Image (tube, rainbow, N blue to C red; front, side, top):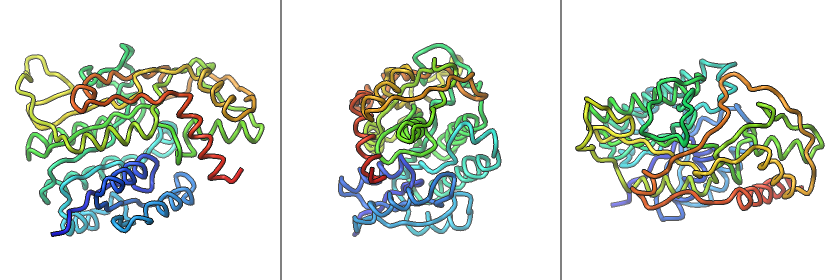
Length: 338
């Protein structure tokens, strides 16, 4: 009997592409789903898919997560044992302009994924959450055992909602679910709406880069290969109920249900100014800097506590910002034929 496929939603996206590639390299069969929307240049998504299509074990399905009937049919056909749900409407700033895109993709779409898993024998659902769920929290490093009830963007609110929706399915239907709180991901094949890509493009074109909060931002930049490694290790580890969990003192990071959340971050916040200087060195060009105030929905600093990840899968992200940026710049020049 042929090996059952793993579903990766958002497979034409930045993290989804790397995870699908990593699974294929490990000999797995992968069904990749994406709606190929134009939130950013679809030609980059097509280029990623072309790489994945080099492997005969990869099958692509173009579909919107909010397509209830289509999603039901897909799950019924494949009976995925493992689902890695990375498809979503991304971005904090865009959620201020187009909130409905987040409600459709991140709430309705996630509901369809949960239903598909529930009715078709899925043994483990892993899904993308975000460091943005920490919202107004100021205690650092951010821990999964901290309360996260004060999101400050709709994007963050939809990700927190995903964790809550997953918990109810884990509780009611014993569906094992693992939430992945990603911290500022960067690397080759990265998204054009993210800082690393925007800065690189602007510096090479001699245009100024915008640095919010007067450049005093700190981000826990996490290299995409580290993210993919952590996810693949976690697929093999469906969460178990926590026997020590108590409703008297509820731990936000575990449950009596088979439900867990993990931070996936580098565990080392970088000053944005330092990141820019490393980028300048890699590009051999100096950036013109435009210092601006904080933007609504943004947080001044992110810093991941990854002790739980280390304990449970024996892995912590560790790619240095210098190595990661060098790899990104090499890919950027190659992809854009510079």
